Amino acid sequence: MIDYLARATALAPRIAAASDEIERERRLPAHLLAALMEEGFFRLLLPRSLGGAELDPPTFARAIEEIAKADGSTAWCLCQNTVCSLVAGSLPAESAREMFGDPKGILAWGPGADARAVATVGGYRVTGRWSFASGGRHATWLGAHCPVYEADGKPRLDPAGAPIVRTVLFPAATAPMTDIWRVVGLRGTASDAYAATDLFVPETFTLIRDDPAGRREAGALYAMTTNTLFACGFAGIALGLARGLLDALVALALEKTPRGYTMKLRDSAVLQSEIGAAEARLRGARLYLMATLGEVWESVQRTNRLGLEQRIAIRLAATHAIHEAAQVADTAYNAAGTTAIFDRNPFERRFRDIHTVAQQVQARRAHFETVGRYILGIDTDLQFV
Image (cartoon, rainbow, N blue to C red):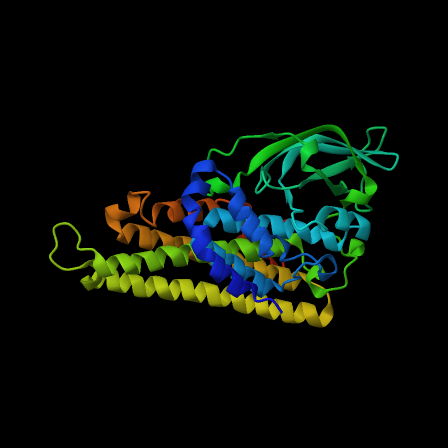
């Protein structure tokens, strides 16, 4: 069995060496993409039937965390693209093979407003504009989540009266991309926008995302949802970035004598206390996340289903991990003093990246309210659970 964590560790120096290029070009360079593909990192969650690793969630989170220690944008793209590929477990086998049979097959998607998929013979006519398509510049396929409309313009509703939303999948070349990704952090993800107008998508390249009834692959991994696996991976990214910052602070403290002082930074009682507290915070958040993923995965393997209680558990542990990691990052950045503000040093990019992670949907503080309402037995919006 391939040890993807060991592969991530071995590849990390090469990723770190490319980080300046990633930042400058605002996307992953071709030579790094080739290495990631060769080592199978875009196929971590693909079914074994397609030559994928079908990796368990705890190991997936650890591998993404290891990559994030080297570069946040690379880890983010891998997380986004590999979780998107989970749809292979629900697509018709022939469609899944067409998309992912080639080792270079990569799927990206992002949210959109005013999108629509109009039902027609054999599929849908899709119109809309979507954004935040992380990794879209190297993707071969794009996805879009669209409410379905009948040919007469009426929305298609489920038995409860809610709009039916289908995820439609189409070759990336059919949807032009627009460069919108001028951002504070995670600059290398190229999370740009894309659009389609009256694009025909066959029924066989559409699905209802995370619908247990549409599941084709029997492996326990495909009982998981994209939301829970995004949570696993993005929490791993935050932990990896925070670990990189804290380790950089320790290395700096051993060498730096702050201006106006005669002793090295390491001899500061204030810094010693801050490092101890930050280490406890980071280890605690990581252990909580990994223990939760382990418990949930054991349950899913046993029952072949992911219950609401397990989804809530992952949401809480992942949100907590992201926010704890961001606080550790702040501690490391502040303690490094002016050293941290220079882009030649290993602080400012990680600082920008982790605070960009913390601004995303997966890190919303509202998730704590969702969990609290669940614990108290109060009805709540479970859209992102």
